[in-house]
Amino acid sequence: MARSRTLTGQYEAMPGNPLISSITDAANPIQSAGHGCLVETAAGDWYFAHLGRRPIVNGRSVLGRETSIQKIVWDKDGWPRLAQGGVLPAVEVPGPGLPERKWPAIPDRDDFDEKALGPQWQSLRLRAWPDNASLIERPGWLRLKGRESIVSRFDQTLIARRQTAFHVVASTCFEFAPESYRQMAGLVAFYSTDNFWYLFATRADHARLALGLMACERGNISYPVEKEFDVSHQERVYLRVEIDMARLRFYRSADGKEWFPVAGEYDASILSDEHAMPIGFTGNFVGMACQDISGSGKAADFDWFEYREL
Image 1 (cartoon, helix red, strand yellow):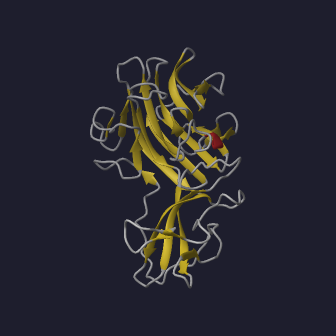
Image 2 (cartoon, one colour):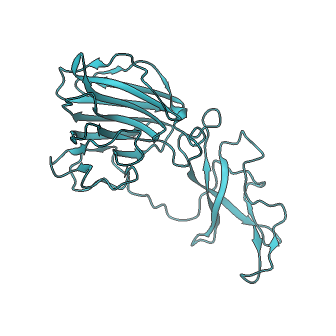
Image 3 (cartoon, one colour):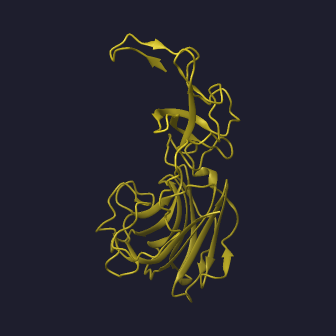
């Protein structure tokens, strides 16, 4: 912090700078505190809204940069200070003396009945419409049209929403009729093209419709499940992912009621800012993807997507 009577200075530095920092305490629940802004409420209370991250294991932050807020008091010399004293951010702070105003909640389940996706949905680098996705071609369904590989840095089809809690479950149901192993669609936990987990449906030598699992860590692709699961008897594919802190598990179902684990438990912490190369800030996303590297644009139709925080 610094202050001056004029915009061009000269400026006087605040004794005891900085106002806020986590650098001296690696055990503090909020790390990388900073990049903030002072605000005065209508009731005359002062707060400091700032960025931070909450590591879960090995210093890794699956939720990326989050917004935090601190109570501010002014000292006898007119400098702003954290109400709790010191420079470390607090996890809980006194609320303002204002009426509560709740932000409208986003429904857990999206049945894709609207003409446009809600603001919680994001596409990767490019606008999703109309080339890659449609809510009109099959009303009540989200049609994703297969484009380039899921590791492509150019034109691929991926619709996802940000993970905003440490323990979440995301599920989806879709119809897909691949004609080649080069056509894939499914459920993805996605940090970047270099770091993701992907449970997908495709065509295999032993099955008209099969489920495979792909992992990508710092650009290195692997397939934890040696042989894809044969689900040719299903008209619809039901997939689920549960992320609990640094643990990730995938599930499959034939009816959306009885769920079976897909192989084992995996490391969710690779989907973090600190594990990304060279560096990142977004946190993890969960969502739907479709690829057709044969170039024919094979589509998958998603009936619904559900995201629940536990």
